[in-house]
Length: 436
Ligand code: T4K
Image 1: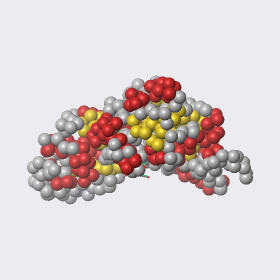
Image 2: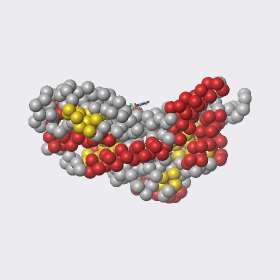
Image 3: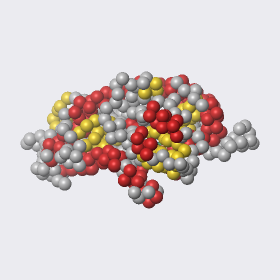
Image 4: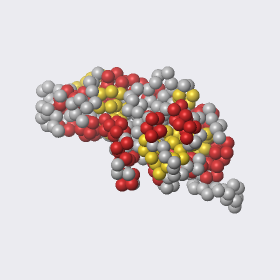
């Protein structure tokens, strides 16, 4: 679809050529010819977009010289991290439950208010180990509207992920849909706290109790988020976090399982270290899920900066919310302000009556170097091997399909400033008005 009135090469600023654009730097407008778009953290020149010809898709230069990602890493104090890294090198102890990993586990457990944090090399292995330690078998109910790792962690162990539909208002599992998917082969439920907003924990607990199922949570998005004032991490039998580079809280790569169950924690500690219980003594089948010392050092450093990360994400979220509210046909997913949130994802739904499709909007934004994402389209059930295994799964997932087709996730994080957000929203507004 072509944007109405588009003339490739015509500029926004009257009387100037297309490359002679007005730019916005640190909130002030100034004239500049030609524009050199520089992506620096503090002062980046951003072109003004007011009409269709200003859009990169119509031949104008992109808004950003460097890609604006949805999730650039949040990184704490560099000096503090480098000093920890130096100590690790001096010590010559790099992995295998070293002192930094132990301190990390203790700090995380304290922070979450749980008895145990079992640190792992990434969230996917943490999911595999947790599901195995819980003895899940047969079928396990999960949402299809999640990152593929939730399903793959099961399939990898030849456990069948059974996809239940979501509540379109929350994007989380719909308890009634979970109930419908239970069969005699079902052994457990994995709720995902999507976007850091809690699953319907109470309802899932009731279902698990009634049917004798194990209940755990994929809390990959939920670090620092609460339900009724209690941080996610202590619900169900265990909760799994991802500390991937793109997560609100990262350890480069990493993950952890939080639990209040002593025996379960012990079992997972064995499993993440090949089942070793002391030298030459393997007492359990296991894998290598250990967190390295350098990853733990990153974690400790980032933990010290957590409040700062939240403040930045919250500021960006508020800025987007105000701008998006003024664009008919777009709705931003809101966080419950009475709870703790990490505000890591800026999630927008595009209504069917919005003048352009969600996918066209993505195309237009990408042309501006704004790498908005379609998380978690097309749903796990539409990816292999599930698509081939269960070609009709979609019949039970109408809400998942509808939500996956209308969601767009916008860039945020500590490298995204208010001017950049204004720029992103200008592009969307211009696209809408010139396509109506
Ligand atoms: N469960 C759920 C619900 C999850 O969301 C995830 C992970 C898991 C389980 C599994 O946890 P891990 O095993 O990953 O610990 C990203 C992440 O790779 C993935 O961890 C995450 N979910 C998912 C939601 O997003 P992609 O495919 O979107 O893009 P990626 O990793 O290439 O990064 C996104 C953008 O961030 C890039 O376009 C560039 C930028 N970036 C990325 C990295 C890695 C940086 O600026 N710096 C970096 O170091 O998956």
